[in-house]
Image 1 (cartoon, rainbow, N blue to C red):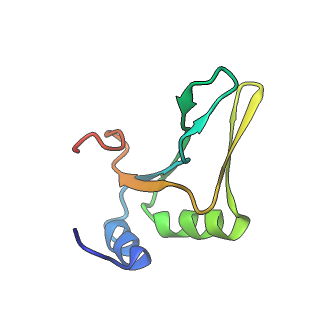
Image 2 (image 1 turned 135 degrees about the horizontal axis):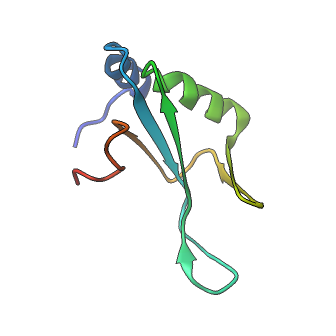
Length: 94
């Protein structure tokens, strides 16, 4: 495992200007039915500059996703952030 400076890493990934996704994961929690669940929110960044999205999420204290009539909020810091190409799902190569 390598410790990295995320903004530098994200800028390096964005340098080619191709779309890149950033997916935020919540911690696991127990829902009203007693099941352990987590939520995630994915943002596709057309120019690949995911560090800007990350900065906004940090500044705002989290990310809100609306699914139908439900509003899901993942607070910052979240449990996990995954950078991935738009044609791949998070952890697809894990």
